Image (cartoon, rainbow, N blue to C red; front, side, top):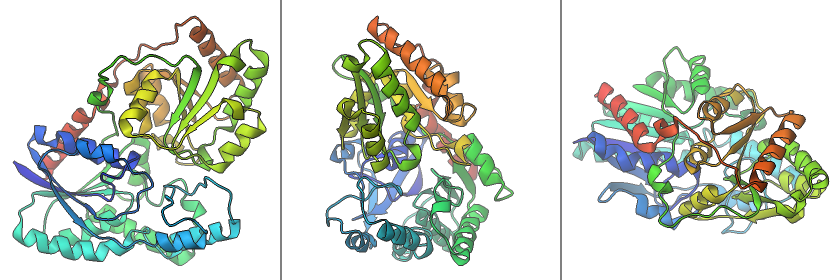
Amino acid sequence: MKKVLIITYYWPPMGGGGVQRWLKTTKYLRDFGWEPIIFTTENGEASVVDETMLVEIPENIETLRIPIWEPFSLYKKLLSKKKDEKIAPSLGQENKGNSSLQKLSVWIRGNVFIPDARMFWIKPSTKFLINYLKENKIDAIISTGPPHSTHLIAYNVTRKHKIPWVADFRDPWTNIDFYHKLMLTNWADKKHRKLEQKVLKNATELVTVSWSWAKDFEKLVDREFNVITNGFDPEDFNQKEEVVLDQKFTITHAGSLNEDRNPTILWKVLSDLVKEVEGFKNDLEIKFIGQVDVSAHHEITQYGLENYFKRIKHLPHHLVIKELIKSQLLLLPLNDVPTIDGVVPGKLYEYLGAKRPIICIGKTTGDSAKIILKSKAGIVVDFNDFEGLKKNLNEYYKLYKKQNLHINSEGFEKYSRKELAGDFANLLNKIT
């Protein structure tokens, strides 16, 4: 069996979306003739910890861990956060704080920690892996980012050991939706772009998670990008006991909600429906699982919805799946940003696996919309389509009252993690 070294910052007991892609891919790689070896951190800063994910790691898999120094302790001191407080994985804030200090921390993040705050892991990891590969035969390397420091580790290692290398971009680098918010100096911007080009030009193969993002990357480098989407693991949805739908008219969102994804239009629509539709105020429940930006809390209160809002800070992944399966509706708000076409949150695929109606607020011709509509998994309304969202929510509510709120989705099986692991195996076979 051939061996592939996977360089990933996110690995159990870390939880959250960053872990899922390679934990689940690793689970099935052996079925396609590839033995995964994991290289990760010993003490990385986890925004979410989920010990239950440890049981998902394939049996007897070799895992290499080395320590990492990260500047988050300084960040916490700067913003007067507690030592054990978790850092949100975006620029959003869960609580109001000193805006000047927040801006300073963002400036430092973009202009000092290049490509990211894991930059101090690059040198020791490079040294460790170069020595490891002198004694151990590896057929291919995969680096997955963000953090994009993983790609620079792979670049350094493959310069020394001529091993085929796949760079997997779960998110863009300089095209990421918050790049313009990093307050970059000209020097820092050039540095980010120079490092990005180093990876794009030297990796043996390039992968990203959506078709539009692949086109965006191809504008940066004259090379073809492979698209291997995120997905869902069918085994996660084989619930041992029957899951009963929520009695309330639940609208559930799983994962982090940053300021850019705060769906203001939804709060306006729900506020109207509470006032206008008989029974709606008695049935509504807005359920958010994960970190929620302060802007959403503020607007929920502003529109008189605080009594309908249920916040669950964190759940183990298997319990999140259960919440999705029993929810009446699943909410997918997207970022209204220039790169919106390629934004396909990983949670979308688990929403598909849950087989509950999806309400997507975003671009109606983007990649997320195409997946939802082609799968017949729900509806997509534009960011400013107040009447469209109100009409669809009212129709869903009527079906809920008749106990007939369901969908007959189709064609989404191709997004199963096993199928996608096969796609990675085919790519590895091609370069070896």
